[in-house]
Image (cartoon, rainbow, N blue to C red; front, side):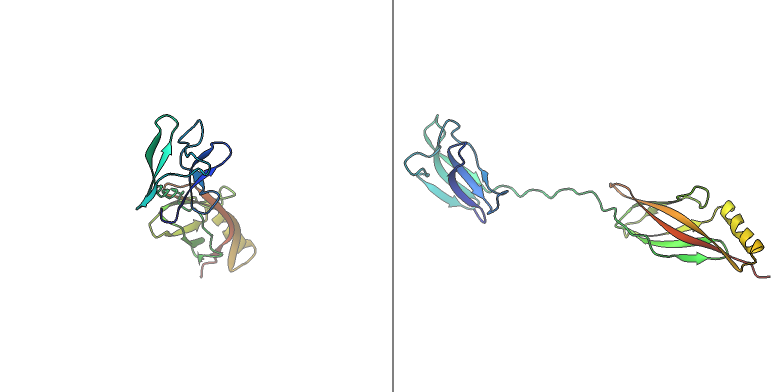
Amino acid sequence: MGELLFFISNDGVHDVEPWISDGTAEGTVMVADINPSGSSFMGPYPMPLALVVAGDSVYFTADDGEHGLELWRVSRPEPVPPVDLEPSNKFTLPASGKANLKQATLSLSLKLPGPGRVKLSPVEPGRLKAVSKVVGANGKVTVKLKATKATKAKLRKQLRVQQKRVASVRVRVKVTYTPDGGLPRTQTKTYVIKLKKPAR
């Protein structure tokens, strides 16, 4: 039967019955308990009186204990269909992004496993604007970290009070990616939002 071995054996529970094996413990199984009350094959050395392999089937004689000796057939098992796995939701946040010092924003380029939706929000509420975007089939999307009015006011105060040319604030960001038909996954990372003092 191709790569399968057909043989007769007694497992100590079902008496002598037909078995098939692919060479592994998991792939070795009894075909059927043809004779529930005893052995399906008679004689001092139980074995089929006739056995023929034809294509993916084995034809042999056996006794089910009720109808006497009859012709039986065992066909090669159908391949097990692949498991329908959940779409991958694994991704990694970039180490840095592209800063816009005039608008106090930071653009992050993400490479995700496939289509879905990505949501960005601050771990500390009120520091950044929440963003939600649809992810296309290629998995590439750019999300922009935007400072809220309160965060911009804090940056402007730094520029004014500390006489800085560039003010900065660290924000911890939570990014959640949900693939189409899959489960959400969240990553967090700290980024720096900067605002440059306007030229006079």
